Length: 291
Image (tube, rainbow, N blue to C red; front, side, top):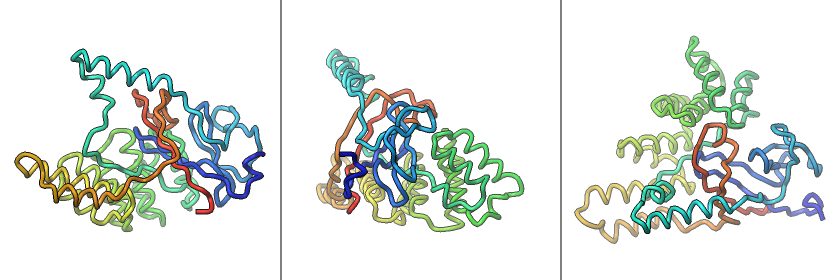
């Protein structure tokens, strides 16, 4: 039986731990979200037909759960552990997560919500992983007579420029662009992302201000908890007080169940475009469409 024959089809959220890009697979409100196994990118379709070709590489799209190749990542992890036993810890240190870790949400604004056709094209480039082109277009629009500020979509466009700048390593520009976006409209996700940049450069007071206004999503709660632990470690001789750690655990909330966790030797399409050298971990969240 094809998934399209089933009324309550499972949706999967696929996210990349290395660059933050995310995509859904399964039935959506406007049609279907499909996935390409070859180029590791998603596509939105009005209707689903088995064998539909990926617009990027021509391979068949799928709406089934992704089939990642596990062998490369497993061997990479094994080699790192064996090297650490021999006293060479650099490889293991490069794949272990950094704690406390601040989580951003770099999903770009929806191109379909933008009125200007040129701006919409830039956001489509951003969503497809062409961060360099998107940044160049948005930077030009922001610099020529500040045309970006005359647009009814100014807040979204500054937000998009911030994401493109962050993807390409221009962190000071990203922080400025998040600030411009927030000057035009309050956006919890812009607060979240600017707070992460502030925390990573050591502005803990600025980060705390942003995280406090970043909403109550999983990322915001985790970041508030991580910041509390970081401050407790920095200001307390020895181990932080048990009460401080328990307060941080309560803020972070319970662990969120996921459909599967996969480490793969292949990067996501956005990572590949931006030149990430190390294979990321990808998380799949299984979400019934009726939820």
